[in-house]
Amino acid sequence: MWWGVFDPRLLIDIFFAFGLGVLLFSRVNEPRTLWLLRGYLFLVSLAWFIQRLGRLPLTSKLVDALVLACSLSLAILWQGELRRLMELLGTGRLAALIGNPQNEFLANESTVAQLTEAAGKLSQSRRGALVVVDMGSDLRPEDFLYPGIPIDAQLSSELLMNLFASDTPLHDGAVLIKGNRIISAGVILPLSRQVVSRYGTRHLAALGITERFDRCICVVVSEESGTLSLANQGRLERPITSSRLGDLLKELIGGGLISTPSLKGSANNPKPSPTNKETNSLPRPSLNSTTKEPPN
Image (cartoon, rainbow, N blue to C red; front, side, top):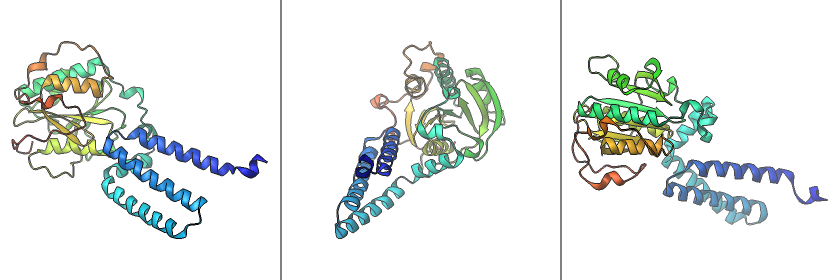
């Protein structure tokens, strides 16, 4: 009797649709994007109910046309996110897609301390640097224009300083960090498609990799001015001090650490932010700087 009233395929359909919706909502953090996604899913649900429960051919056609128009609009608006989704599905990186980072991506307090200290010293000496921290995107050699030279060494501020020394062949590329280890150096990153004339090559590379993979961040040190920047989800916060960088790193990769060791580089940034912009939290960009910097 029960099987004659309820179609088991309908229950399975609703279950999978609900699971997909939960996955989508868990991956969205920005309020405006969340509102768009809610509206789109409401239209899709409305079209499904009209087609299944009602005999309204004209209304069904109109709703289908509206869903199609919204789908095309969202495909244009979210082309970067859709491209990243296809890349993760194509390479089988389901853990990065679901958002369950493996142990190799887990950082601790030492990671934040070493990276902040090195960034402060590099900023003081005006040595250009670009550091990519993989927090679960599972970055692979095919994700870069050039995968760089394998290092596979314990992270330390001294090693980072040596890798970005101006007389070494690896200083122009990026350093890739996973967890507490330096994986490779001299990595060439894809550039961002954003047209921002005042950003140099390092800043555009930081924006480019964080646009494609939302579970990685980039620390940038400008070679011209020593300015510190942090890129996250295709957005850049700059300029920031070493202490502000440490706070952001603790928030993003440190798992909400409460205590941190004393950092020698906490006051070494030669160009601190003159405004209260440092109180803003990522991922909102900080684009009010009017100083033009030549390409790094």
